[in-house]
Length: 320
Image (cartoon, rainbow, N blue to C red):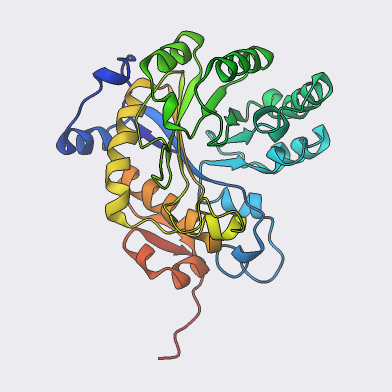
């Protein structure tokens, strides 16, 4: 688990810092920064992130290299307590690993979820809470969720329904980029999710807000061509690999966020063909200022990683 320094919360408009200051902050011990990816069950990861044979437990495998995993499957279907208890058992014994979970889409998208779904989701969270493995509960709203009286009222009520959990709010429309909204989250001690996404129309831009006890960053990629294309599948929409230069500004923002938060989560969501793992390892290596371990198969597929990572296990010999 990487660490960045921690100071008292200063408020979004008061955080400043040069590249030199950021470099010094990144090199000091302080509040923990957990770096991970969104999900682990992707068929296109086999042979890249995971070995082709034998069949690998993706959760266990990823936890060798990352400090956190954002579980996205609960967004589509509420898991059973038996399932989440299995996640808890398979989590590494090392200190500091955490899960974050996406709230069921019935609460954030079609708003069809009622008290039954609420209780079911809370029951699913219980094994992770009891094991002290739940780092955050992400309420991800769509771009269509705009800052108007109806949406503000719904958000306030939803936050009250899940009071007591480590809540994180992700919004994607720029109408929420308003000081009163950030003040509202700060008063409620709710984390704001700082995101990187294609800047199309009224899409919210990159930020470094820390409004709650935890800081949160999600990098979705910058696939402008497919981001809003209706017939684009999940893989196409998140098919993007950040360059080191594109990550530079985010290293500064992560440092700023970690100064205010007790702990910070950085999640890469550009999952197609393991690109999220590549960028997560690059970020972790830059925070820790040392080479990190990476799956040998990932290094073979993405040689750009060789400057920041060492193979964990034997690589395939070259034919030339």
